[in-house]
Image (cartoon, rainbow, N blue to C red; front, top):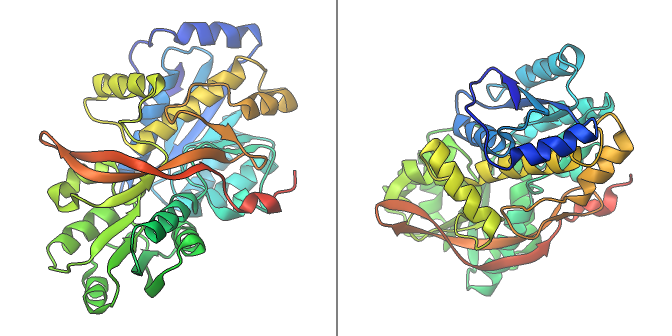
Length: 381
């Protein structure tokens, strides 16, 4: 694997076989990764990067150029233009935030570049704004929340307080929960993206008639809120999608998150061989437990390499067909694409537990089996 902007050590066993197949098809691929590596939310981008690198390590047919978008749409657009026009990348990936994805993905695909999303899944790109060159390898934003709404119906949650940041992903997350939830929504509030002080919102929660607070606050936002919430004395249960309770966040929150339920398509304890290998290799390489972001970066690289082993990226139709086959062993288990090139996959309910000295997640059941998004009906390709 060739790259710039970072240092990578020797390759993993098995990568050379994939590389040999790609070489036989003329399948060298230049990848432009724009992700968040500094400021708020940097941990998410770092994990996507590290997961991708772990899977692709040792593959000399993958050239990776990495840039930091600083979580700023204008920076992401400038970097995308540079990668497309100056670097002449074949495939783009890496973006964490939906507002950045909406600024970059349509322009990239309009210029004939494949985009593989390792995280952001805005509804606009799953429906009317879909593209033959755009593949989402993570989820559509509503998915975890639709599963959570169904689980809440079945588990006696009657009144909820909803909260999310006011940007495309936050709006999609809340819309997804409300789509399936049959109980009462007592309050629905939207915070500033990047907000760190939640005193006013917690005061509203204390006064609310809700029995459960359901929130989506990824990265540092979730850390700030959960610490403040745990110390506030509010006695309502907390619940949300995995982004607010993922491994990196739990490391910062600690025991304050114990008992919280959260939905995810992945967990470190999923019982399949690909996942066991990924978790062990990631811990050995980076000295920490992987997050769902790392898992998504890893699967994105596996998907890319599986396609490069079958087709030349310069042959657009053949490469797209190879991507659509999703012929790789996902860490999530069964994985395939719906017609809008978004995942069909199981979504699990997890609970935050303590294993030894580590606060982490444990799967307690399936919240939605073979889930696919509702926007695909509007996708015409």
